[in-house]
Image (cartoon, rainbow, N blue to C red; front, side, top):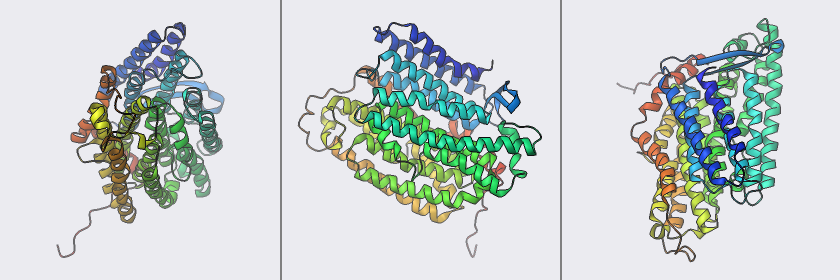
Length: 506
């Protein structure tokens, strides 16, 4: 058993331990869940120390026959892309457990079911990033829907049942299209590669044999599924409802981790397996990404609900990520991957602190939060820093990734980059206006006695803020992992970085 298989199995084994604890002992269940998720994070960090950043091949590989008649294997491995997303995922889960300590109370089921679902979801989040067999990826991709559906529908608020069903319908539709493309891969690999295979490395040769029409159809099956998951305009409408209805912790994992499966899939499968089709559809995808940037920003400016505001900002941010992915330059690719990592922490900070604000005020309406800077200064400062990171203020982590995306995109698609830059101006509006309403001005009646953050909450938010600040000042540790694989992805797709243009007369 490889170390990454052990990493993936540890949370689900922990879920079995949690299942043995009596439901009445909720404190012991929470402590056990926190200990297990912390151990998973520690193991992932150890694996990262053994990772060779200069090697762009899959590392820590393991392969076992699963359904040999169809060429399906249990095949796993990690490269720089999957490593950074695994680290982001496993670091966020214990933070969510600690920050949202009382989130399971008031749900349809007990705290034990809540944490079992969280641990099962963590196993699937790791599994989807380490899978190097397309069919294995698809199985985990679809299975992830189950714990998320129950977390939203069982522990959310408001129209949680409707939001959970909407999330499920959108995701299943995308999964159905992906399944059609996977069947197409089976047929074409058997015809052109001599035997059916779902191995990612072997399938990178398939595009050389299939017709452009076939490649375009297979590409679209994967891309639409990932565009729904990301989400990309106009396939985004499930996200605000799910974020509004879900608990803050569920929303952190949904927007911070699960949505990254969509952008991860665009790189791992759409570009790697179908590079010619990627070139064909890139202009359309760039346009959709720019629309997402501006559309999400305008919706965020008009938002009156705190959870919906954060969801709309994420639609805009995912527009930047997708634009960077399909700009097909090493700078933009590095920026997009780094943006995925940084967005996970900035969104986590917004949802966690926003969740504390909502729990104290018993309202998610932005207008109900007024004068918090005077009443709860620590909580207000944490929300302020999270907001500044979301608008990509220089010195905070999101700035580096957004800058790389825009610069890398400008060298190939200057018009798109210039229009997308307007999204930065809009970001200042959709962040600073709510910050002004919620934190400053006169204290809104009902806020006078709100408690500030307690010790547990300060411990929970401290590492998130530390990552946001540290990577804003010194992003090299993560970029050193990302840059080699980003350059390899662009090169493997048949692109080279545009040559610098010379100034006339020089």
